[in-house]
Length: 211
Image 1 (cartoon, rainbow, N blue to C red):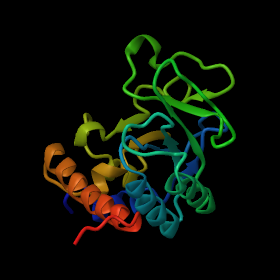
Image 2 (cartoon, one colour):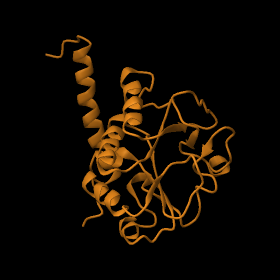
Image 3 (cartoon, rainbow, N blue to C red):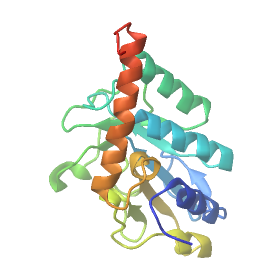
């Protein structure tokens, strides 16, 4: 088994977690819980690919989406369709917000994570919502993240398979796994290539002559 950042290994991670309960942030952690969380920083398309795979495998994750993203538009047809599909697949949809702007509306469950947070506000309680980076959901020994295509404490696959975590919050960024590259730069280049093709299709749909 290779601990690569690709969908094949992501499937292995999900399958390794079979003894855990797929928990969401509507209650406090219990023994055996796995809080699978996705901060969707860059790509709704990647989020949907991941969400479909999870649904196929019987997994449930919380998707945190950005109303102020520079890379996608939740107010577009694609954005509304993405939210609808995520919910249809059984995944809660929360808010990935740029501090201090928090606009919880009827698109979102009352769950929030700050985007690129500073330590002084990252874990502070948020009125009217669960901050997933606040206690009790964020605790030493109970959190793993793949940020910038790097596991700071190692890939959790073997520990999940062995049931080593009492409970765990696992942060996964979909674009890292869907657009495959050996480094973060290579992965982002793959994403940019895919985005170019999407823009060409959008131009054609808008009756722009691309011949």
